[in-house]
Length: 567
Image (cartoon, rainbow, N blue to C red; front, side):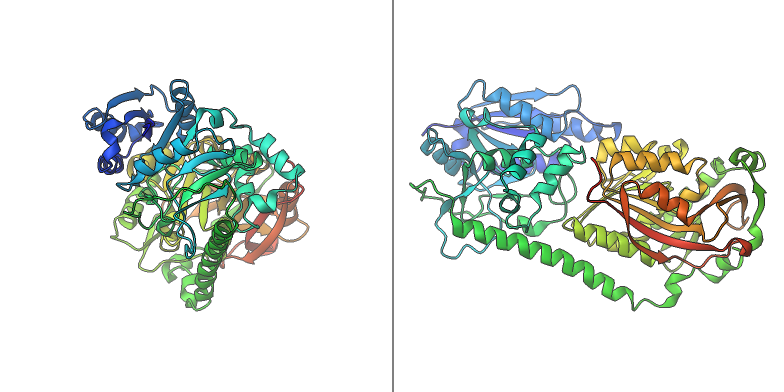
């Protein structure tokens, strides 16, 4: 049997990588296989140690016919790594087997892959051989079957097919829309691959796989799937670039040999229908979970909607004073929020929350019960349910993660959570050193966060009122084309007063500071946001005491990108 070379793309997960190699070595064909490893470079300093651990390990690997290691000297990212790596290898070989550093394989994986690649190497209609199958209902299905399109977990293909791969997402989407194929492409609307493709075009993800699927789908090619999966994805533990806690997608792999390979090259309508039904069930599970959480919220005692009595008693109307025509006039009379003493107090409080020594922190004050913002939590759960249980959020002015830690019990119930915080430079430095992890990251600017993590929702949690120029920030946000904008605990004027710039005196029990604050008119906020967004819902936020003569209401508002908004 002809043996195809194996490519593995690795990055910063030494334990995952070792498990993948160990699983490959259980395959008899491994000793006759050329192994080519592409090791990506660290995208930031915090990843260097793990990247070096991986590079040290892969140099110790034995058991293959040959081993070639390509160490990148700059960060490519997964998509660019795969596109360039597969292209380079297929300049020398006619076929290839592709794995990532989280794909553990069955002892019969290589036998199946090589047999499929040999049998269908000259069959134009076959796009690829796939080692994974979703945990669908397999009753009555053959040992292997074809489904229209292509896939990305443990796969192989030929040079003749890879040369037909269209990587321009805009062209692919245009063809799908022009030929009225979106519904079929999305498995009857049950999995929004078209939305994933749109987000790739918008720069909100860098998925090579959705373009691979779309390319082969439009060419009416099919991919061979095993009835029982021959791989397990062990990266669904939030350790990777495009992964999350969806263990139900890859619970295990089969230890059975695949001996049947279909002669007729046809899209298996029964298998495709089963996959469509599976995607439908996933959506129902995610929405059901979110709804169950929301239904529980109504039973929360009222005390969860109020801070502890001591904190409430010091949040009085006379903590606001002045009426300034310009922001800079108020700044001149304020100590501001840049004090290292404030940062130190916030850091020490949040470290106790992070380490389980305290339950909840707000404005550096520790409490023995969590104070939830119900409107915010409802909004987060709604957004995640609209995105298959995933939340990728930018928290503008999010301190060192106060809102993240406040809601983490509910966020842990989501299948995926990435929380990016944009803050002042000294907060960012502290956040990276003490709080950053696989879910929580810190950035100096919105554009940096968007470039790195591609969030689709931005949160202003009691922050917009403290900005010198909120209009410029909102215009920037609108240009970046987030799917949702959420304002939580935002005081707005309802009435004829357009705005009021004042000074807020922070009670010394929290930390000593005086901060400029701008009370914006409700209509003004709507006029900024409504250029590209529509008001989806609004709630009354926590009770606060503001100057009585201004008719201020504390609001939580969620905006959704308008359907006709230009990209």
